[in-house]
Length: 97
Image 1 (cartoon, rainbow, N blue to C red):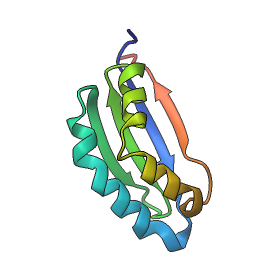
Image 2 (cartoon, rainbow, N blue to C red; image 1 turned 90 degrees about the vertical axis):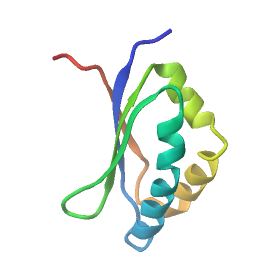
Image 3 (cartoon, helix red, strand yellow; image 1 turned 60 degrees about the vertical axis):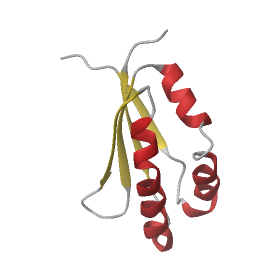
Protein backbone atom coordinates (compact mmCIF):
# COMPACT_ATOMS: atom_id res chain seq x y z
CA UNK A 1 0.00 0.00 0.00
CA UNK A 2 1.27 3.46 -0.87
CA UNK A 3 1.52 6.44 1.47
CA UNK A 4 -0.78 9.45 1.64
CA UNK A 5 0.08 12.25 -0.74
CA UNK A 6 -1.18 15.58 -1.94
CA UNK A 7 -2.03 16.54 -5.48
CA UNK A 8 -2.59 19.82 -7.26
CA UNK A 9 -4.36 19.69 -10.61
CA UNK A 10 -4.44 22.77 -12.85
CA UNK A 11 -7.44 22.80 -15.18
CA UNK A 12 -7.43 25.40 -17.97
CA UNK A 13 -10.76 25.60 -19.82
CA UNK A 14 -11.34 27.30 -23.12
CA UNK A 15 -12.90 30.71 -22.27
CA UNK A 16 -16.32 29.69 -23.58
CA UNK A 17 -16.34 26.63 -21.29
CA UNK A 18 -15.29 28.21 -17.96
CA UNK A 19 -18.77 27.87 -16.45
CA UNK A 20 -19.26 24.33 -17.86
CA UNK A 21 -16.04 23.17 -16.20
CA UNK A 22 -16.86 24.94 -12.93
CA UNK A 23 -20.33 23.36 -12.74
CA UNK A 24 -19.06 19.87 -13.60
CA UNK A 25 -16.41 20.00 -10.88
CA UNK A 26 -18.86 21.39 -8.33
CA UNK A 27 -21.23 18.53 -9.20
CA UNK A 28 -18.65 15.89 -8.22
CA UNK A 29 -17.30 17.52 -5.03
CA UNK A 30 -19.65 15.75 -2.63
CA UNK A 31 -19.23 12.30 -4.17
CA UNK A 32 -15.47 12.67 -4.31
CA UNK A 33 -15.18 13.89 -0.72
CA UNK A 34 -17.24 10.87 0.37
CA UNK A 35 -14.82 8.38 -1.18
CA UNK A 36 -13.01 6.38 1.54
CA UNK A 37 -9.51 7.32 0.34
CA UNK A 38 -10.19 11.03 -0.19
CA UNK A 39 -8.71 13.12 2.60
CA UNK A 40 -9.21 16.52 0.91
CA UNK A 41 -10.75 17.73 -2.36
CA UNK A 42 -11.07 21.50 -2.79
CA UNK A 43 -11.81 23.58 -5.87
CA UNK A 44 -10.06 26.92 -6.28
CA UNK A 45 -9.96 29.45 -9.10
CA UNK A 46 -6.84 31.33 -10.16
CA UNK A 47 -6.97 35.03 -9.34
CA UNK A 48 -6.61 35.84 -13.02
CA UNK A 49 -9.82 33.85 -13.57
CA UNK A 50 -8.61 31.70 -16.45
CA UNK A 51 -8.05 28.37 -14.68
CA UNK A 52 -9.14 26.17 -11.80
CA UNK A 53 -7.07 24.20 -9.33
CA UNK A 54 -8.01 21.07 -7.45
CA UNK A 55 -6.23 20.84 -4.10
CA UNK A 56 -6.44 17.16 -3.20
CA UNK A 57 -5.12 14.72 -0.62
CA UNK A 58 -5.41 10.95 -1.03
CA UNK A 59 -4.74 8.03 1.30
CA UNK A 60 -2.55 6.46 -1.39
CA UNK A 61 -2.19 5.70 -5.09
CA UNK A 62 -4.88 3.02 -4.84
CA UNK A 63 -7.39 5.58 -3.55
CA UNK A 64 -6.65 7.93 -6.45
CA UNK A 65 -6.94 5.07 -8.95
CA UNK A 66 -10.33 4.15 -7.46
CA UNK A 67 -11.42 7.78 -7.81
CA UNK A 68 -10.40 7.88 -11.48
CA UNK A 69 -12.33 4.61 -12.02
CA UNK A 70 -15.52 5.89 -10.34
CA UNK A 71 -18.45 5.88 -12.78
CA UNK A 72 -19.21 9.58 -12.28
CA UNK A 73 -15.67 10.63 -13.29
CA UNK A 74 -15.54 9.25 -16.86
CA UNK A 75 -18.20 11.66 -18.20
CA UNK A 76 -16.30 14.65 -16.79
CA UNK A 77 -13.03 13.52 -18.38
CA UNK A 78 -14.84 12.96 -21.70
CA UNK A 79 -16.16 16.53 -21.67
CA UNK A 80 -12.67 17.85 -20.92
CA UNK A 81 -11.57 16.65 -24.37
CA UNK A 82 -13.62 19.47 -25.94
CA UNK A 83 -13.73 21.96 -23.08
CA UNK A 84 -10.07 22.37 -22.11
CA UNK A 85 -7.51 24.65 -23.73
CA UNK A 86 -4.69 22.30 -22.65
CA UNK A 87 -4.33 18.95 -20.87
CA UNK A 88 -4.85 18.89 -17.10
CA UNK A 89 -1.55 19.52 -15.34
CA UNK A 90 -1.16 17.17 -12.35
CA UNK A 91 1.49 17.50 -9.63
CA UNK A 92 1.71 14.78 -6.97
CA UNK A 93 3.58 15.86 -3.86
CA UNK A 94 4.79 14.46 -0.57
CA UNK A 95 4.64 16.81 2.45
CA UNK A 96 8.06 17.49 3.94
CA UNK A 97 7.23 19.65 6.94
